[in-house]
Image (tube, rainbow, N blue to C red; front, side, top):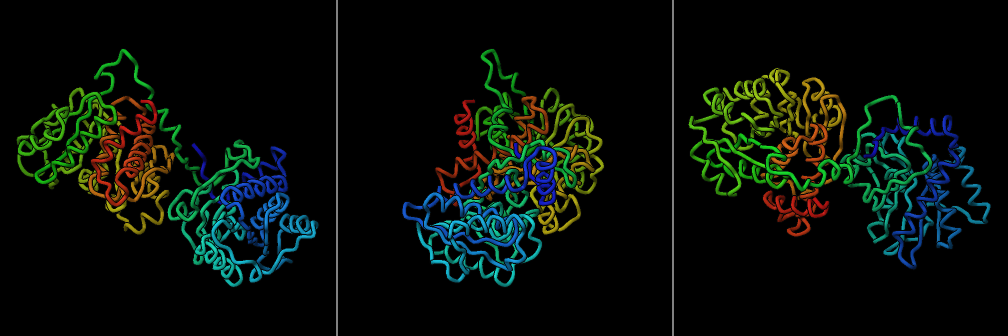
Length: 511
């Protein structure tokens, strides 16, 4: 996993690198500029030209170092320094002098050559410290960069695309859209949260000499972690030769209703494809046959009462939950005035971890105190609209403060929370935050959340520790969607295709 820092934490890490570990800022800049030049070369065509656009700050200094390395390599190069040169930082001034000592001269922005395919723009205008929208010559420079990109040139950004807010991922206007962003040392929030992640293009983190020890004990907000494939792959080890179906747990799904039997079936099939040894579905008797028809491996438990789920279903569900290793409650259930009370009783009495999704979330939103009464651990998997109902905020407010809202809720109620969406967040009851990089817009279709809840249940049933089970399930779910989209495209992707995507994940991981 990779740490994800705020701009202030990044400055603190840089200061610690110098004061504690003997890495002066000049050396960090030299390493950053070299990596930036290498990235620019990697996307240039055989006859490519390079325009390096630098600001007056240290980000501009990184660009000037990159220009020097490109020049030493024989590149066809033009450089512009935007803004008042008298206001350049000491490091930027030093590197401008070093570049011009080679008899190479920086040009005015408007005299830089026009670029097209095979050419590269190095965006070194602004770094992580930008706090307001670019104006004047800086806005004009961004417009130049965007024009060159529109003509086919590749844009390589130094640390963050100029105009992007490093702490939130929100762009000012104007803002550069990069093809490649070179992240210096450690990741920043704006590089991994949307829409910043998309504006960064391909994110390449490079080591510039910032020891990971420099990031320990940083002040400010909790450090989120970006989940990587190796992390998720390690959660489920290869299966032992002497294992059996009981080894991998029994999931009970409480799901489905008339017209929504597919939600229960997707949950159950996903749990099976995610490795659960056994999967049962408890649902209204009139739809049970329709659920079980989706796969012969599903076992069914009929709930004979009628109408919305309520306290009349308590004893049958307690009996069904006996001996189960994980419960998933919510996809497609018929919700009524007693559904929240029923879920509260189940949480308090069932000896298994429980995932609440879909209408189970809406049912408990009226009395969140039941979450603290649970006998075992509880996982909630809301999308932003459901999160808004859980918190009393608007969806817009939730989306504007995703990390903070998710962490505050998880810690306040002692639950593991999955806030779904682009860059889904998993937050433990202790407040640890995991950012997921997998998934694609094709997954914005009905039923994909039911698949996720089934994967979560399967991982919990296999006795994976809760916080690991859930961030790993989120990663696998997104990766399954990415692999499935390679066959169907994003527009044609439907939720059931994620089940084959899961198989593709296990083949990829030799599981």
